[in-house]
Length: 264
Image (tube, rainbow, N blue to C red; front, side, top):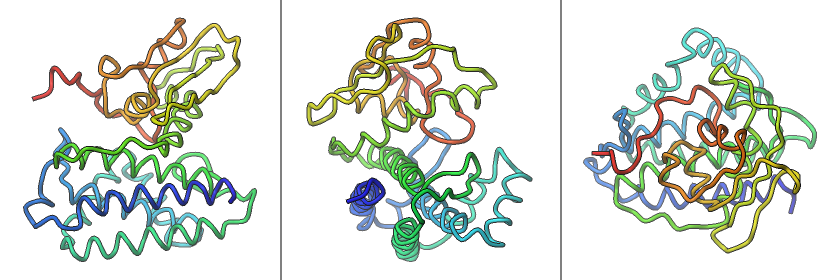
């Protein structure tokens, strides 16, 4: 199994898990609000479906992709939300059908991208493995929004490693999205997986270190938790500063998440 195959298998598992949480919801269930900004369960699924379709257009690299880029350039801060608002009007049963279709077609398309070939995106171009990892991260994060709103306990699995890996790899990009430059310092990252395995990144002798719970780091990186609510620690000024800005996704960071103690 290649790296891409492994990520695609984990992406399918994350998607199927979320599918199971929403497939039996009635109309009122799809209207449950999941975020402070007012996104409902329907918005979450619509967004995942739209991003699958955008990824398919990027792989095809034709007129549809060019039109998406033009739309993004015309409204860089609002086009993603606008697309979710447009698609949220689809009936739940139809939404599920289209989402299942789009994620399967995307998996097939990503499996067919030649090794070494880059796919265009709204940010830097990505390999098929990187695009699959980004889709898994998005699915993992938005599934958390849905699960918390519905009162579903999310099973802790080692599939979260992909989310952690993105968080580490995008350190410089996280600063860029805030108009800042990352400190010129190596950081050692040591995270404990749900299985108990230790995952590491960076040089062992780095003075700056981030250690702790992998699940918490992923919640921090997807900006679902404030750092006071996760078991993740920093040693060194650069490491401490990074935990204030870490994000796994492309685009602006949005509002800082409130500590759980301050949420309504």
